[in-house]
Image 1 (tube, rainbow, N blue to C red):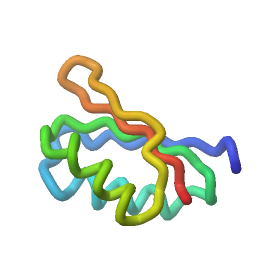
Image 2 (image 1 turned 90 degrees about the vertical axis):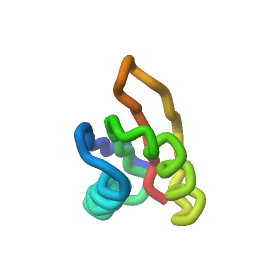
Image 3 (image 1 turned 60 degrees about the vertical axis):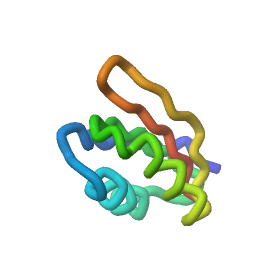
Image 4 (image 1 turned 135 degrees about the horizontal axis):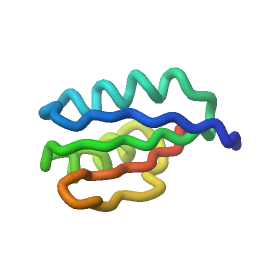
Length: 76
């Protein structure tokens, strides 16, 4: 595992863009790297867990910060 971390602001983007753009960012990280994504699209609440199940990445956490949905993903 690595302690490399990156953040991506997907606020204002609508489905499927938050997941698609987060996937691009994950490609830049080494295995074990963490990506924190902030999104406002309500569909992201279900999309990111599904994305992680399908790709094998680990959804470390998922929470709301007011109107912002925050996801932390560890690259497989």
